[in-house]
Amino acid sequence: MRALFLLLLLANLLFLAWTRWVVPMPEGAGLPAPPTATPLRPIRLQHEAAGAVGAPGGSNVPNAAGNLAAASCVSVGPFLEQAQADAATSSLQRLGFTARLRSATDEVRVGEWVRVADLATPADATNALAALQAAGLGDAYVINDEGPGNVVSVGVYADPQRAAEVASTVARAGFTPQTTERMRTLDVFWLDVDRRANGGIPELQDVGQPAEGALPLELRVCPSVPVEETVNGAPAAGGAAG
Image 1 (cartoon, one colour):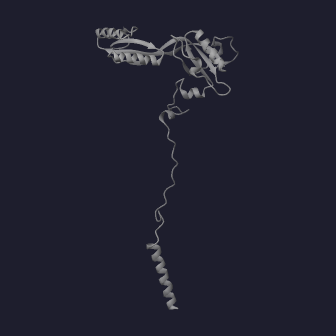
Image 2 (tube, rainbow, N blue to C red; image 1 turned 90 degrees about the vertical axis):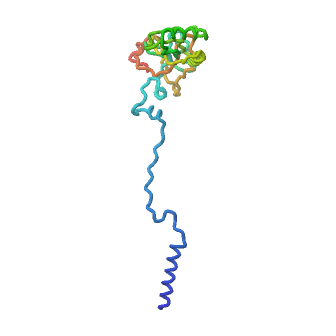
Image 3 (cartoon, rainbow, N blue to C red; image 1 turned 90 degrees about the horizontal axis):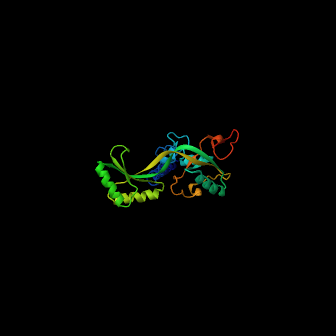
């Protein structure tokens, strides 16, 4: 009996030694369990967060892309002449859109203004004007009412590509061109266009390129304008555009 007891004790000791020093321990055994992982938040670009509906600091610009995507009505324009708006109306109608003519007095973009600014003296401005005209920019002229310094205006161009070409000519003539958007308050016409039943809204190319001397076209969300203020027919009772 004693021999059997000693044999069993020896077997237990050998098994314990085998499990401790021969068999490898499972990875992570004896270590505390890791905490439950917190779900990662999606990464967003700054302009995506700023444009989110209801987000602090979101865009309030009337023609912001996010607002246009959700609008039920968009304004296409501006047009200086009603005939220009009528031609655009015909183009939109062929595409299945319903357009209403509206007159307004708005601040609108008239083009890209190219100029040479901060010239030290009137004589410098006169010399710069002569050099620019010799380079083929015959519409350039000196102005003195655009803040400090002397400025040579090279022109305002509705076509951004044309403005870029003129700026390149100014640079080749040895001057540093400055290009900014030129805004002006004008009496203009807009076309208020409802979203189609299939969800479509017009794009600028749907009305074609602006005619020579026309304003650059843009899209804005329709304002809440009473129908009585529109100019394309009898007003509908109690209605509102937009």
